[in-house]
Image (cartoon, rainbow, N blue to C red; front, side, top):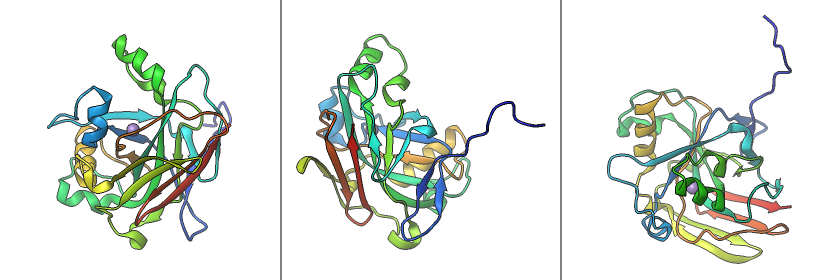
Length: 229
Ligand code: MN
């Protein structure tokens, strides 16, 4: 059987110190996973048994150094700096103590959100998908394999916009830790090689505008730079 339309390749994250890329299958995001950000949303913390899980389309990936066109239908575009975990091996119903064996590596990401659409969706009890689904909604920096960076459990996470500090925290503050997140995701559906997970943001996301330059950093992992057009 042949394809009726041209077949596209999966988007890829360049791997640090390598000429390889990491093909992206699915993008998960975990919400309200830092207590200080959960408090400022007014939505409360992620509950004890189930984290807030959303999906973004894989083709919303934007690689390091990319330019994000200001998206349609919004007047409030927020970047959320987050640690990104890349899954390198399939797994189902994983125990937390086995989950880290399925991690390929780590990167810095910006979970870009049309915040005004998010609030409209909440007010109307609609799903949030549209607020996180647009071209360039998922910038991710160079991917750093576990062989290079290990499994970072602490480290400063910070976002600067035009050289001004906007968000600052530590990945040690994650409520759902990397292993817990992967185990939980794998209880709903098998995790697959190529899946990536945005693990949540600390307090302080603030709207960006065309012309802004965003610089993210996580100690022990790496950096991410994009600009808004
Ligand atoms: Mn987020």
